[in-house]
Length: 251
Ligand code: HPA
Image 1 (cartoon, helix red, strand yellow):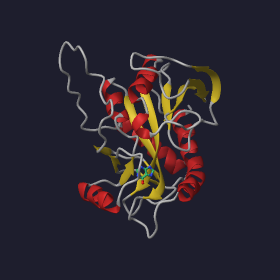
Image 2 (cartoon, protein in one colour):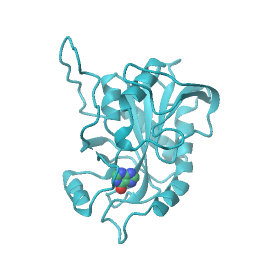
Image 3 (cartoon, protein in one colour):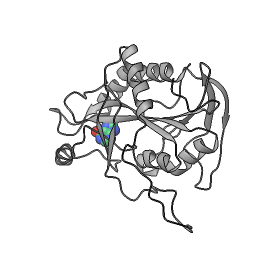
Image 4 (tube, helix red, strand yellow):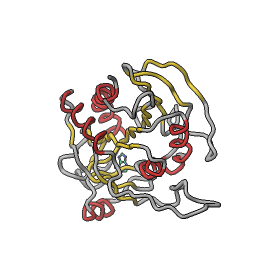
């Protein structure tokens, strides 16, 4: 079970295609404010089995915030202030690696950050000292293993590794950008993995990414990327993501 020493709730940040958690037994909803501003949406409190969960829709509900305008600091701070010490970030991604085609679930183990201009640290302003957090392993390994075991148990097709390349968006990439990312070692590409993971690390939270591939990355198929293709992969793959969340979080 994914849990940070009970009674801490597990935070789930839902991305494109996951604006609500249908299995969640909802106990309340709160609009909160943080020193960094308001999060993307009200926090939804609930339970999966015995485990308290706080669900937050990263792009708002309805989906209205593009990746570069998400207030990642407010989102992470709000979850932290509500007691969450473990966060599962659900992300729609494009597949670069040949094993990471549409509707495949991925639990990445590394990140390369190509984003720019985002508020990406809590350590700024009038500081007493400069802090450099360790970020060697951006994703919590035990939480990754729990997600991987749940995917196996639920027979959801998954890849238990992968380097997540975080791009700025909101446009998709050129074929040449994807080739460069591939040479860099990226296996998948998304727009919301950073600074979320780094901010969680700054707060000392356990963070893990559950990715759903919704398209082949630019130039990795014989056609351009369409919203219809993305919607179809979400339709096909999101039930697996929901089952993995339920099995890995509910006790
Ligand atoms: N690129 C960047 N972000 C994405 C993609 C993509 O191809 N698909 C889903 N999120």
